[in-house]
Image (tube, rainbow, N blue to C red):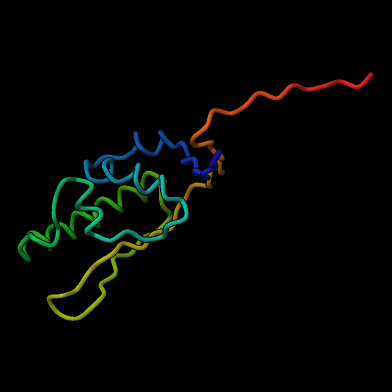
Length: 128
């Protein structure tokens, strides 16, 4: 039997329902399910909403970055993250961007899940 550790999300439906924007609502479940992460690349965010950031023209990418900032401000207002910053890496037109953030909610913990064989029942014996 193989065991795999899975993180429980912070179970924060309250945050989700306080969000106003479509992008922040699309991204919150992903961010919430990654409690050990502190950044997300813009390529990942665009893929989560069905876009390909790398193939878009520079005007659309600039607009997308503005939308990202707005969505993360919404996440801060809703109480899902404490703070964020949009960070650029690389020179000129080959820059890549990522959003660094800090979770505002505590981690819910870990749960070990059995993968594969069904668990066997054990009989407990009492000593008299």
